[in-house]
Length: 332
Ligand code: DAH
Image 1 (cartoon, rainbow, N blue to C red):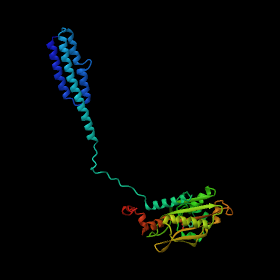
Image 2 (cartoon, rainbow, N blue to C red):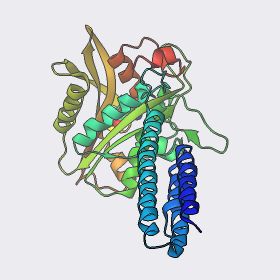
Image 3 (cartoon, rainbow, N blue to C red):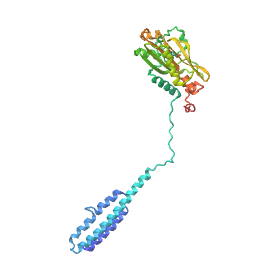
Image 4 (cartoon, rainbow, N blue to C red):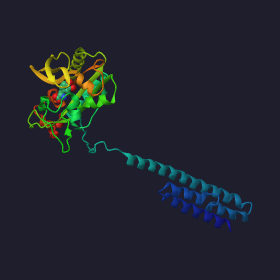
């Protein structure tokens, strides 16, 4: 191996390596080139191995040339490395660019149905007053819907509520008062419950009547509860539901399961509007669940949710609440 051989080998290496480095497109490839050309067992080292046979004067010449080649290639590698790294960052940035002017996907938000929001509001108020949520079945027995509520089979009050009877003798509950009995059977006083639910009556459907509607029932049993407690509770409820200063009146009425009984009217847009029935729990009802009426007294109330929702939202026809018409529902 002569000096000129080695020199031309080195030149060739430089040319070939420079071209290879220039045409590299990935960082991985570039690293591979560095190893191939400048690595410990790379081509440059291999060429230099031939130096052993050269004379003492020739060696430094080749050494200097080899160093030059090495520097030049190292420079190209460094430069290319920077280039590729920058290109990589630029590509990444371009990829992650967010086009804020692009059309978005609009997902319509659901809303709470006015009946549910009314029930929620009622429950919030009573839970705030210390009441517990209770529920009962919609398919009831005659016992829970009537009998235990002091309404025996021949009682004229049964005519007040036209009942859907089911084959086999059960019925669709006509009011949530049945939950009173079920709850008292399972619990000892003191009791304070609020019981929302669906009820059924054989009413002809019109603007103010529906065969299916919703009620909320209230029951409080304790030692020493009086009609004053009932009035105070109802007043506070109406105040929170409809706002301050709404005139309300208690009007004597009749329900089989309360004695005395009353209906509550609120003055709404210049008219007295009947909104609920209530009264002191009849001793017969307390006896039916095994409570001693000499020790415990209580009050109960019940009202229709649709009526409340219609008053609160000025809805003119009860059927709108069941039609699932988005033009109506979107207003809430
Ligand atoms: N259950 C009665 C109805 O559906 C409403 C009612 C009146 C409930 C008086 C009560 C009450 O708890 O004390 O018409």
